[in-house]
Image 1 (cartoon, rainbow, N blue to C red):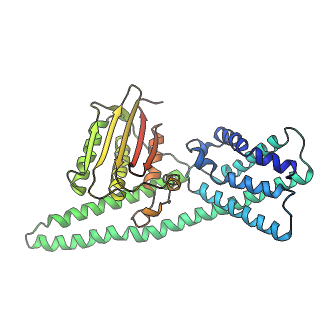
Image 2: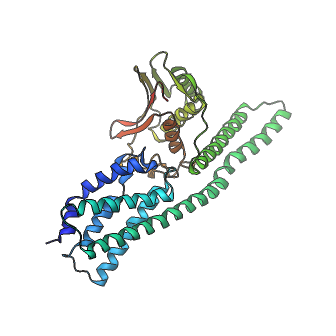
Length: 366
């Protein structure tokens, strides 16, 4: 049989995670906007590993101890990597999560009787090792992100700049011959817009990573007019009949017009990129007395459930998005902008139903 500590831990794993999540949401600021799956991620795996470490049933040979240490290290590093993907998380908050977990484990396991010295030592040593591994990987992932900044900067910015350079040269030659060459001028403008958007995304992501907030200017917005304007603008690039707008009339709210436009454009362009070709992208805007809802839907292959949990993390891409240009910042920044409006953004995706990104905004907020 399992010894008492291991048995109690195994039986109370779900309860420990619930108690930990309640405290984490109260005491770790970065956890507020995460759902349970993303917030807990690899911690349940860690508890299962700790059950084995506490067990007397499993023979503690040197090979077994080494295998447990390797598995524990892997889980700790996984947790550190996951946390580094969120702009809100700092090293102290990552470490504090483990301190809370240790306190909750002791609280639950010692409800009926005190743990033995050996059992307490195993738990403390395991938590300390997990903190070490998670913090090390957290730092490494941040360094990788910084390196990715530089690599992607030189790669992705060079493309738009080359288009501008070549287009300018060709346009100048054509203009000398009396030909305005409208198509090339349009490509130049599109390249400039891409470059501007990429640079703005980098600046905003850097600002959020440093703990600053986005600079938003709020005003009364006519959101039905905004949605129609965005659809009309994008129609020039993606086809006149590609976007379908279904909107309530006179939908007004307090918002940053520029940033909400940015979110809508990003989601609509993503719908074109990843949706089924030549199928409509539907933008549905609705309101009630307290809330505004915008759904952007595309047909096509669904997003896998395990991929949905990383969609809104910075520099993270699903497998289907790996061949697309950009830095994986669009959805991360969209989520940050919507949360700055005290709203929410969610994704629903299923076989045969396509993919919907759903934004909900309060009509008024503090």
